[in-house]
Length: 123
Image (tube, rainbow, N blue to C red):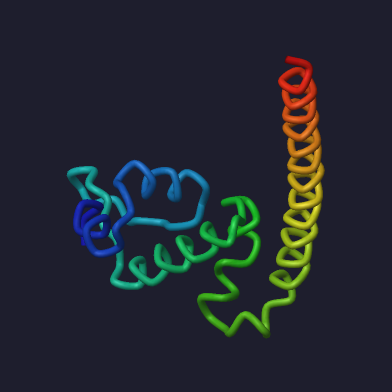
Protein backbone atom coordinates (compact mmCIF):
# COMPACT_ATOMS: atom_id res chain seq x y z
CA UNK A 1 0.00 0.00 0.00
CA UNK A 2 1.12 3.56 -0.61
CA UNK A 3 1.78 6.13 2.11
CA UNK A 4 -1.56 7.90 1.56
CA UNK A 5 -3.51 4.70 2.09
CA UNK A 6 -1.51 3.87 5.22
CA UNK A 7 -2.24 7.36 6.47
CA UNK A 8 -5.98 6.91 5.90
CA UNK A 9 -6.06 3.45 7.52
CA UNK A 10 -4.18 4.54 10.64
CA UNK A 11 -5.21 8.17 11.06
CA UNK A 12 -1.55 9.18 11.09
CA UNK A 13 -0.43 12.05 8.87
CA UNK A 14 1.88 11.41 5.95
CA UNK A 15 4.40 13.71 7.59
CA UNK A 16 4.37 11.57 10.74
CA UNK A 17 4.75 8.39 8.71
CA UNK A 18 7.81 9.86 7.02
CA UNK A 19 9.17 10.78 10.45
CA UNK A 20 8.58 7.22 11.69
CA UNK A 21 10.52 6.03 8.67
CA UNK A 22 13.41 8.41 9.46
CA UNK A 23 13.45 7.06 13.02
CA UNK A 24 13.62 3.48 11.75
CA UNK A 25 10.21 2.54 13.16
CA UNK A 26 8.72 1.56 9.81
CA UNK A 27 10.46 0.56 6.61
CA UNK A 28 8.80 0.81 3.24
CA UNK A 29 10.10 -0.65 0.02
CA UNK A 30 10.76 1.87 -2.72
CA UNK A 31 9.19 1.06 -6.06
CA UNK A 32 10.91 1.88 -9.34
CA UNK A 33 9.11 5.22 -9.52
CA UNK A 34 10.33 6.11 -6.01
CA UNK A 35 6.99 5.68 -4.24
CA UNK A 36 6.96 4.15 -0.80
CA UNK A 37 5.24 0.77 -0.71
CA UNK A 38 4.20 -0.53 2.71
CA UNK A 39 3.33 -4.10 3.57
CA UNK A 40 -0.05 -4.85 5.17
CA UNK A 41 1.91 -5.37 8.42
CA UNK A 42 2.83 -1.65 8.44
CA UNK A 43 -0.69 -0.80 9.57
CA UNK A 44 -0.17 -2.87 12.74
CA UNK A 45 3.24 -1.27 13.26
CA UNK A 46 1.83 2.25 13.03
CA UNK A 47 -1.03 1.43 15.41
CA UNK A 48 1.52 0.10 17.90
CA UNK A 49 3.64 3.22 17.51
CA UNK A 50 0.57 5.38 18.20
CA UNK A 51 -0.18 3.37 21.35
CA UNK A 52 3.33 3.86 22.70
CA UNK A 53 3.41 7.55 21.78
CA UNK A 54 0.13 7.96 23.68
CA UNK A 55 1.89 6.47 26.71
CA UNK A 56 4.32 9.36 26.46
CA UNK A 57 7.25 7.37 25.12
CA UNK A 58 9.70 8.87 22.65
CA UNK A 59 10.32 7.40 19.23
CA UNK A 60 13.82 6.53 20.43
CA UNK A 61 12.39 4.52 23.34
CA UNK A 62 9.86 2.84 21.06
CA UNK A 63 12.58 1.89 18.57
CA UNK A 64 14.32 0.00 21.37
CA UNK A 65 11.56 -2.57 21.70
CA UNK A 66 9.09 -2.21 18.81
CA UNK A 67 10.30 -5.19 16.81
CA UNK A 68 10.13 -7.40 19.89
CA UNK A 69 6.55 -6.45 20.81
CA UNK A 70 5.39 -6.85 17.24
CA UNK A 71 6.61 -10.46 17.31
CA UNK A 72 5.85 -11.32 20.96
CA UNK A 73 3.74 -10.17 23.87
CA UNK A 74 5.10 -7.24 25.87
CA UNK A 75 5.71 -9.56 28.82
CA UNK A 76 8.33 -11.42 26.79
CA UNK A 77 10.25 -8.28 25.81
CA UNK A 78 12.84 -7.47 28.45
CA UNK A 79 13.32 -3.95 27.09
CA UNK A 80 9.75 -2.82 27.83
CA UNK A 81 9.49 -2.91 31.62
CA UNK A 82 12.53 -0.72 32.36
CA UNK A 83 11.28 1.89 29.89
CA UNK A 84 7.80 1.84 31.44
CA UNK A 85 9.30 2.22 34.93
CA UNK A 86 11.51 5.08 33.78
CA UNK A 87 8.53 6.85 32.22
CA UNK A 88 6.45 6.35 35.36
CA UNK A 89 9.26 7.86 37.45
CA UNK A 90 9.38 10.85 35.10
CA UNK A 91 5.62 11.31 35.42
CA UNK A 92 5.78 11.08 39.24
CA UNK A 93 8.47 13.78 39.25
CA UNK A 94 6.35 15.98 36.98
CA UNK A 95 3.31 15.47 39.23
CA UNK A 96 5.33 16.51 42.30
CA UNK A 97 6.60 19.60 40.49
CA UNK A 98 3.10 20.54 39.35
CA UNK A 99 1.72 20.00 42.87
CA UNK A 100 4.41 22.34 44.24
CA UNK A 101 3.55 24.97 41.63
CA UNK A 102 -0.15 24.55 42.43
CA UNK A 103 0.48 25.02 46.15
CA UNK A 104 2.58 28.13 45.49
CA UNK A 105 -0.15 29.60 43.29
CA UNK A 106 -2.83 28.83 45.87
CA UNK A 107 -0.72 30.56 48.54
CA UNK A 108 -0.20 33.61 46.33
CA UNK A 109 -3.92 33.81 45.54
CA UNK A 110 -4.81 33.54 49.22
CA UNK A 111 -2.22 36.17 50.12
CA UNK A 112 -3.68 38.58 47.56
CA UNK A 113 -7.25 37.91 48.76
CA UNK A 114 -6.21 38.42 52.39
CA UNK A 115 -4.51 41.70 51.49
CA UNK A 116 -7.56 42.87 49.53
CA UNK A 117 -9.84 42.01 52.48
CA UNK A 118 -7.55 43.92 54.85
CA UNK A 119 -7.60 47.00 52.60
CA UNK A 120 -11.40 46.83 52.20
CA UNK A 121 -11.82 46.52 55.97
CA UNK A 122 -9.91 49.76 56.51
CA UNK A 123 -12.48 51.76 54.55
